[in-house]
Amino acid sequence: MNEVRGLRLVIVGTGTGVGKTHVGCALLRGWAERHIAALGLKPIETGIAASHPLASPDEPAAGSDALKLRQAGGTFHVKHSPYAFPEAVSPHLAARRAGSRIELRAVRRWVGEHVAPVVVIETAGGLFTPLADGATNLDLALALRPCTMLLVAPDRLGVLHDVTATLGLAAARGQRITHIVLSAPETPDPSTGRNGAELARLGIVQPLAIFPRADERDPATLAAAGATIAALERYEGVSENERY
Image (cartoon, rainbow, N blue to C red; front, side, top):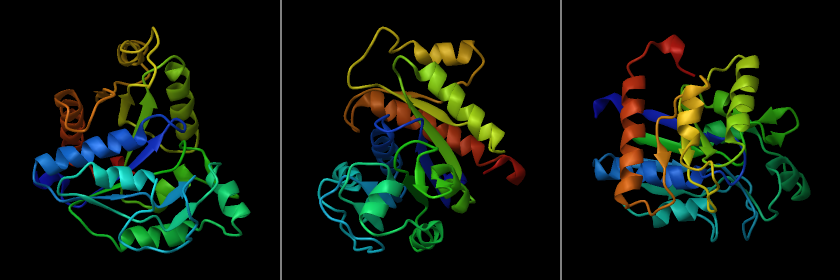
């Protein structure tokens, strides 16, 4: 698996609550199953018990998504968020109400302090969720280059529009996103299980995998993670100007 040594993967979403944490857990589990040391980072969090801007102790805050990643177990681990705020609102609002401001340079510096064969960075909210005035998660991903972006979308009604809109706006801003996975929603609808094929049939995108709503150790989840990891391995072989 030498192809993914030094991989920095930024997980972004079409919105909030779309399954980014579940996909992140599954991928970290997948690398752990392959005996690859992987590190999970979530630099920005909202809706947690305490605010601690720019603190970086080893243990994640109680109730945080980072804690959920650590609880998945394995040979990977997760570091505390440098920006974590109590209000469950958009990061820029949560920071403002806490008397703080999210600085992309500070996030990049913090991420750069953590070195592992695989570093998985989960963003907060959707790709265009504001982090500060004039800065979104797309800007954060660009600040973390060189990296690979993985877009997570929910396998539910509306995803055809949401993926099209997200990819379209990213392209309008000069960024082509090719790696996309779907994650099963908490409550399935008649479109669940069909959206991946429709995204491909309509020529929007071919998802790398569809993650079931199951434990990280579930065979179907591990299979989805394995398919995604395999695609990322192939991607590592492309030329530098095709990477983010």
